[in-house]
Length: 392
Length: 244
View 1 (tube, rainbow over the protein chains, first blue to last red):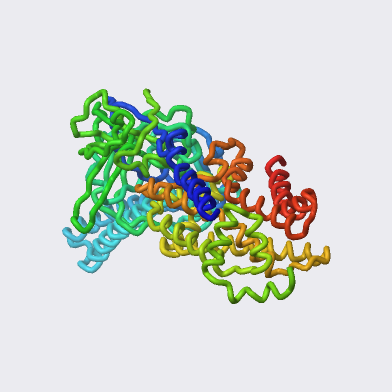
View 2: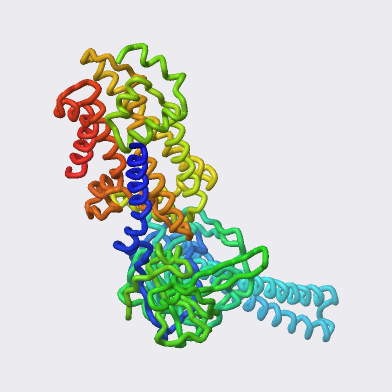
């Protein structure tokens, strides 16, 4: 009886042991569904990313050189102005009064000189007569000396008056200059990008950043460019003239085209960064539909090599293995060998965000496993594959 | 059956428990009588929990840890990206050793907890009916009727042996689950039920129904109602949330 029971149990156990084999035979477990593709010729554009902002190259911040209330404002923010246009007038009553006062001083001094000259002519004639009388012995030496002294003193007074006139004229020039400075003129063609003062407020002649010291900012919109900070590790690959793609944060789906125009000679530690960075200026050659506004945050992708076609595979197909103990690192791809994964060591070259150049010789008809990533990252040599061909 | 029968627990001989084990699988009726007379627990507990722990230890020793994480997360189809990321962070925060220890002993502890709950439930049902069987009988019965699980353990061991690369999903481990027998479903909740139910569990539940009927000489309907009640309740709640 017990033997029958044991046979039954062994039979059941045998069935259970056979189940995994039957399961594999029927359902074909361990087959990995992957996507494959052949080697293709692609343009690889290696690039570096940097962030920064939009700025105007030609931009002036106007401030007043005289202190006074703003009497008139001839522009509003956004207005287009030409070089030499009057944009603001500071109250000039005091300066006009000062000007008139200085003008009067010049006139007074001019008249005084004329009077001195008439007097000198008169004294000169008197001196000539005294000299004649003295030579004929009709007057004494003392009287003659008095006449000469008076003439000399009159000449000195004339010199003094002329100096005063020069002083008055200089003062007039100074006041005139002050008066002219009440008229604020645009030094460039551009647009009022910022208007920091209103009529009635006091313009202050100051270089410090206090209210009233800045009147307005005028910028040439045609001179807008991108200023980015490039990490010092990347700066060696950047050259003037390289192509760049700029994306303003406000327009994430509308990349603009640009060209590197300037690379700073000196590194600096930018705010919020630990390492050294170099300022790189990029001219915007094609803004597309983007409305450019200075100060906008943006990031730029600078393409560091000329576009060139190479044999490439999607970057996720390249697997990297590193053996730190042996100081060895290798790149691999998996190829589809009649439904079986074969790990193949490769040499790689340039890469961009999507593709990596393969330097190794790979036949054009070899199927390379390119995804999906969750299968690819765990793929092993000899795994069975259910491959789906993905072609561009 | 008398109360004195239960006193023989401590004096059970090895040949006796092996005979009971064979009978549980091949001649349940005889086994139920033996269990009613000698409600032993240590032997089936040790052999089931020991073998289960051993096979899970083997499984977690060969498993490709990174692959296992990805596989486990890929099965959480109703999770959002943020929830998946959170779950991944929790899993990655655990060391591999800790993960393996939890994985190894977790299954055995779960089995023990389920058996205790079943035993408590049947004891309460007995108490309400005024039956003579106590917790010790029910616990012994539950543990003995779980013996078919050993077949699942054997199947798991074979499956592990056939997967040397360590990329073996926990759901593929047991060849006796309904899902691995071909009853798969695209519905996530139904699929989960198919992954959870296996032949040995159904066998064990059937044995428990038979034992209940035999011990209490009850009708099929009553035996099935009492024993299957909790399972039907769990499946009902599960189905409700699956269809909601």
